[in-house]
Image 1 (cartoon, helix red, strand yellow):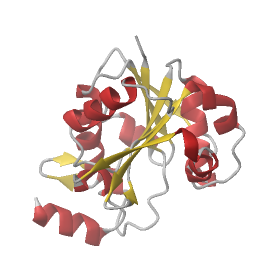
Image 2 (spheres, one colour):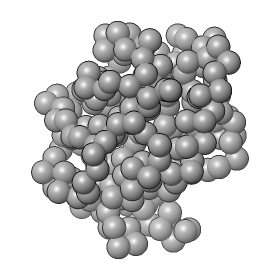
Image 3 (tube, helix red, strand yellow):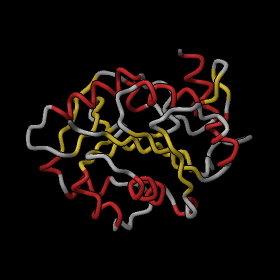
Length: 197
């Protein structure tokens, strides 16, 4: 059985959100973080590792108990997304790392499970990337074969270069589901998406 480790990135600086931390912003009675995490905890992950950084205590206080879930602090979160991915993967024990963004409150447990099932099908590929109208989305899956490469990765802004270097191993999951690309970075995003729902 394949064990999937969800690496939930909740350590960012939230520098583009005016007036506070985006993950703590309210959205239909919950915070953006709570809505995002709820779908992840309802999906079939073996373990869930929430990587904390800025406002760590406030975000940690919103996490409901789940035996699969633990938190880890990224002491260098100001250095960018890659440092948080590396912090989570250093703790992960699964066969597959699923890089989940904590600012994607529209994804459902069914969306995550659809990707888990797709990865399980195995057709010689060991990276999975959702693709909406040609636009790469999230979450991105990496088999644990990439552990060393990810831990040694130096680009601070995530693993897109690693995906490019291993194109022949990438399974692009084509979807007409916009949710795989909807993250919230600014107040405008929040207003637009909240009104659109």
